[in-house]
Length: 138
Image (tube, rainbow, N blue to C red; front, side, top):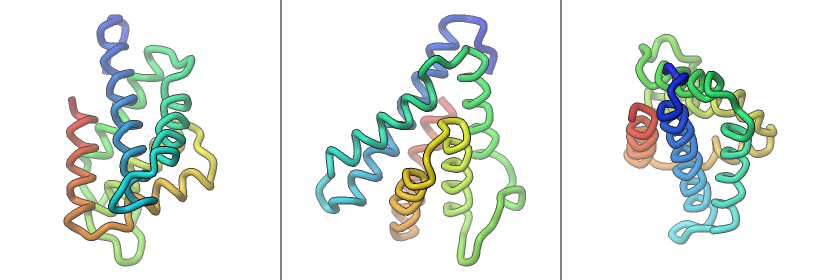
């Protein structure tokens, strides 16, 4: 994503903030199902927002969005696999790994987000993947 234009930088920033909100809600819902644990949701959202956008250059924001787009569109065979994983599992895990590296998430927080995202039934994981993909491809 070319980010020399201030509008494009803001667009990349908005995408990353929206991904943070989405994942915060997923963790909050998982933690207190059927309700939402507001504290858990806000904690995850804040950590992702800070790691992904605080003091990041336009190029850094654009690179993160490009990496996320690549993960959502590449062949599933290109993604790292793990036992029992299907395509939604692989894509969600790859998105989260990219975010982990870019936001410099702690191992504990990464495990929390990963567990919350992959512990749902397949149909729910498909919804999670679709939501993340729509945000990322905006």
